[in-house]
Length: 465
Image (tube, rainbow, N blue to C red; front, side, top):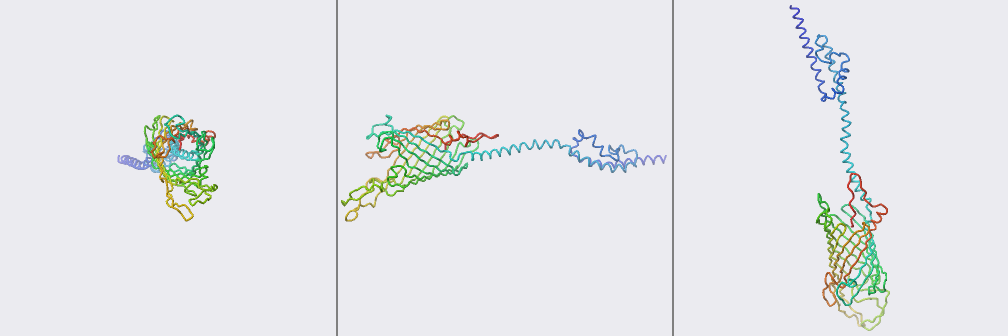
């Protein structure tokens, strides 16, 4: 009995030692955090490579209970399951391969959208014609009395004529907020009536040619839902007028230089989605101009007209008139643009044009005994006013038709009476047919247009500058 009891105790102790020896190896199998994919995919195959030397030890401790001798070799093999735990880590590779595909879609889309917007902006800068805003205008104007409108004036001068003007424009700097542009104005006129404006009927005469430069800066623009509904721009304008008309080049004029700022404010009315009365645009401008000439009075060196001076002597003279040029001019204007319905718009402007002539303070006439002072006659300050109102409608953005009324006249009329701001003998009706040469070029050649890109909004319609 004692020997049998010893055998039983030895067996119990052996089983306990085996159990204690197998318990630590079980912990390395726990680190695979995601054992679930191992069971459906490779659960039967995982134990097979783990027990090449002791297949009975891998299933668990009950197989090692038969005896203590087997406990020693069983303690080492359980450490081997750690390498088989690596293949299960590669088992989730299928979901990871699909995850980069699904996860990369949104970054790629966002990157493509940003690139599309950037390329759209670059394309806008490239496809926008540098010479956009170039126009050719055919103006037809006639005095109101010619159409039977207005009162009786003496003398009643009725004038009707054509005015052709080419206005090329070119952008040196064309950024979203900063723009520098050059422009010119070349034209000629033809009078179809027999007034004293031209010497002969249907005579064609060149007008003064002007060259201009402008810098425009966007100061502020509303954002959010009201983006673009409120906008403030500022500009500085420089212009040089060359004496290419017969009345200018034959009178000793060199050129006229003008400079002045302008501010533009856009104010929302009914919004951009409305059919009309979307927003009103107001422009306030001030321009100062000075005339550079060979004399304060009109002169012509080729005239050499014999005249008698105060001393009774006859001498050649080049003076055409005894009145002075307008040497300085200040133009203060206020313009309003209002879309009435769809493409039909109305514009009106008010302007005050003070003018100053030379005073001839130190004027003297040469006589035999010396110089005799001459008193200056006439006023040196001559204000003028201007009022204009018109309706404009574009035809396929190619041609703009403008029908309007203009009254630009001196503030003081005959007899020293002040003239009406809205009507005078100089009032005229006019019709402008304005061809947008850049738009015509774009429609014919297909260049200069903003193309739509996938994932981006369509380009805005071209707006007149």
